[in-house]
Figure 1 (cartoon, rainbow, N blue to C red):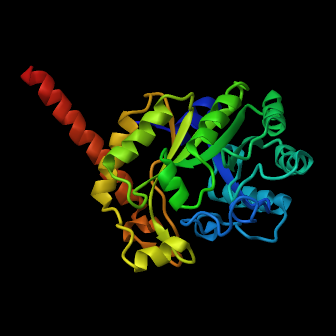
Figure 2: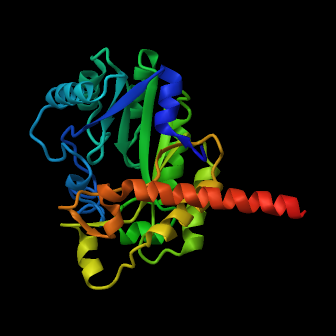
Figure 3: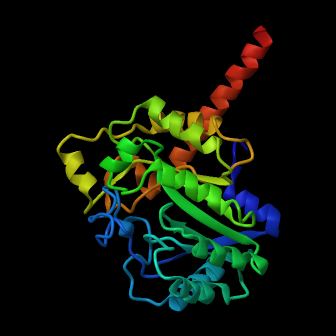
Amino acid sequence: MYYRKFNDYLKEKYGGRIQKIAIDAGFTCPNRDGSKASGGCTFCNNESFSPYAMTKQTVKDQIEKSMEFYKNKFKNIKGFLAYFQAFTNTYAPVEKLREVYDQAMSYPEIIGMSIGTRPDCVPEEVLDLIASYTIEKPEIWIEYGLQTAHYKTLKKINRAHGVSEFVDAVLRTKKRSSIKICVHVILGLPEEDYDDMMETAKLIAALPIDGIKIHPLHIVKHTAMEKQYHRGEIKELDMKEYAKLAVDFLSYLPKDIIVHRITGEATEDELVAPYWCSPKYKMEVLKAIEEEFQKRERLEKLSLKVV
């Protein structure tokens, strides 16, 4: 095993499979509703990665249908993790958040939750609320969408926040030591070169981060990036190129960091490019990454023998 996988971490801790349940709780984002910007991130089409995005189903319905589906699919499930995935899941008044989180946490089979959000949407009272769930549910994560450590890129992709908000959010979150932090990054963003991407890794390595999600940039339909791609303004990554970037990125991070995801994909109906970010190529991508790790391990052993 060349990196610490999230599924392995959960199996070791809970003695079996813990299944994530993706939930759309009906939130939006401050760069969508006009409070900071409009249009959302230039890469974002939540329907391409979230099964319940834009759904009319209640949180209760989503949870119960998902639990029934996964219990029928897998016979060794030990529990579930509620994953508030679509859009910004701390972007609401505290009482509204409490109502939504309480619904998920009321199920005994659910051992915790993972909350996807932006670093500029976690005031102190929201962090206090999230920390309160760790008393009874041990697995509480906040997933911060950073994407890149470069303000110029953040501005181009319409994130409508800076790097300083991310650092501040991480440090304030870690005052509640019971909350675990996962960070999302995208490799291959427009106009970023190798050094830019490795600088993002170095920033993350310098902060008290527990987990990482690394995604290759993939273009999906109905986004601003789709138009940029068709105008020739975005270069797509090659699969082997991405494998090398992912391994290099991880090499800067602490060895015990938990890798929640090391690739990303969109449905064939939604995907524009690159072709290998379709679900049917996922195992090939993971194999390419593993082969890159193996290649470097062999070279390292060879260099030690030479010395």
